[in-house]
Length: 140
Image 1 (cartoon, rainbow, N blue to C red):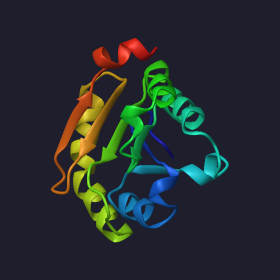
Image 2 (image 1 turned 90 degrees about the horizontal axis):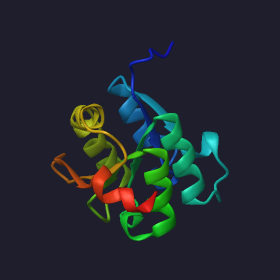
Image 3 (image 1 turned 90 degrees about the vertical axis):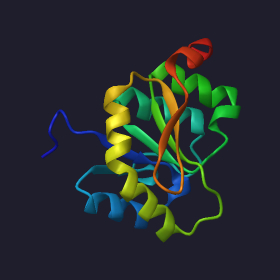
Image 4 (image 1 turned 135 degrees about the horizontal axis):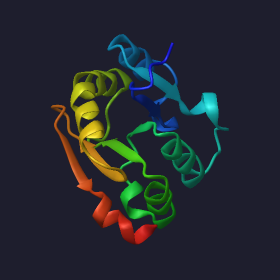
């Protein structure tokens, strides 16, 4: 049974349905997968707003969220906390390893910082907030 103080991590469709979810569940965290909640063609701004409003933590490899106004607005209005992998051209197993290795750091950043924000995760698992709530305020 889900405890009220547990974080839920949401994998966007770019991260697939199984491999990364399995790795994170092995780290004892709650994971939801895009295709279990939304159609595969759901627009990013729609699911981002819904997921952020639920208080779920978004994990993605979409490195362009910070350049698209509709997505930024959905993140800002829903108070979403988004963590994006800052490394391109990785296989699923490599991404799963990075996310699993960084999940405790991701959790600490998510708990310790008010939303909305967008943070990056590098290959070594370092987590850095790149757009904080103050910078995202203009997109509300």
